[in-house]
Amino acid sequence: MKQLSVYLVFMLLLCGIASAQVAPSGDALLGSKKYEQYEKPDVCKSCHPDFYQQWRQSMMSQSYIHYWDEIEYFDLAVPHAEKVPGLKGPVDGCNGCHTPLAFMAGDVTPPRPSANSRANEGVSCEVCHTISSWSGDVPHNFSYISTPGRKKFGAKPGLVSPHHDTEQNALYEQTEFCGNCHNEKNPFGIWVKSTQIEWKEGPYAAQGVPCQQCHMPKAKGKNATMAKEDMVAQHLFHGAHDGGKVAGTIELRIHPSELEVPYDGTVVLSAQLFNAKTGHKFPSGSVEDRIVWLHVTATDAAGKIYHLPVDKKGFAGEEYTIASDVLAYQDMGVPKGIANFAGVQRDGVPVGDRIFRMPYLDPEGRMTIMQWNTKSLGVDYRIGPRETKTETYTWKLPDDVAAGPVTITAQLNYQKLVKPVADFLGVPADESEIVPVNIAKTTFEIYE
Image (cartoon, rainbow, N blue to C red; front, top):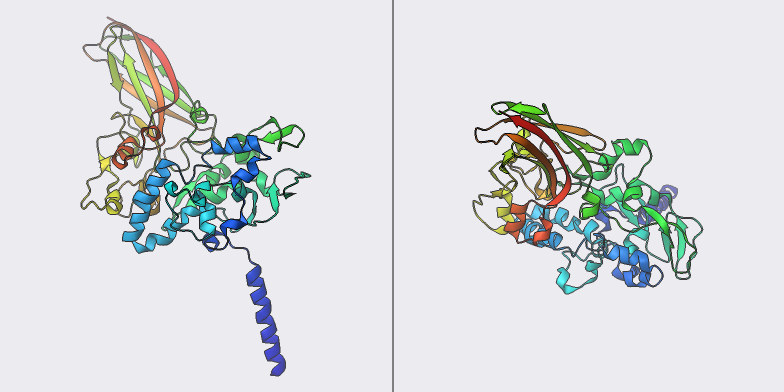
């Protein structure tokens, strides 16, 4: 018995040691570190000035201080969790990706950006370059493992720094690194962000083209001021908030069924949209916020402009993909303290235009922009990587149309945030500005 007791104590000690050595990730990261274990970005700036400036202009540095993120978090998420206590954990978890240092330091809810606390550092140099691994089957919900200290990790071997140790880590060239925050599962078990998963299911994964190749393209430069010139990954992280990245994402063409149409005839316009640029669906990421739509007009010989609505295809859920004059987002009334909130305009774009989106639905089946309150997803009518969608527009020529040449203009537009929501919440206008993705034109002749 004595030997058995000693054995049990020994095994318990071993288990305790093993448990202590398990590196935290995900929810277990909360309060597991201290701010002072991580250096501030200005320290990195002294040896990496170009990378620092690139990072400063990227959304990585603004992940906590960006005005829409602040409004969404403090005006919707935090008050929603106060009214529905079960949401406290998931809402605190927003910080695991938007301000990882604050989350790991247990500084939740963090101070507002105006307090200028270390939460404002967002996804800093130290956040990324101390990630040694990740845990789980699919990277998501800040599943990264952070190992702060003198050692910094990166993609290149043999680099030497006078300030820190450097170690090559294969993870830095893998999409799982990005998936830690660009895949997200909400409290209802819904994948509310799935950009890395979309990539993995698409053609670029099969060809070995990772996220980093497009969002951190390589160019001649120096890793540090004391380094030799080499091909280095640019720290641009340009994506949904970068007009240059969005422009041309979708190739667009449109053509008529006939080049000459009688004044009392009908013409069918066919538009083709090819996703030539993204390794994931477009739009991706915060799909609940974003809207992409195709606007088609005809201008006759007299200069009169006609708006052409898209032809219906008849698939389930199509009503969410054609702009209409309906209200949505009623669940915002809960955090805003508005009883029986009627909602705001769902789309805010010309009625009849085709929308490329995936609607997020709240527990009552209403469209929502609050991903933490999303219980189900609607039809996914986004444009996948290297996918072509065809839309048709059947136009019965109106009696007042002028004979002569007609110009058809098709313009694909993008907004980072649905404008009626932005206006309701007081979000600065540039978050809902119209960003042209592409434009195409064609002509035909009307004869008498």
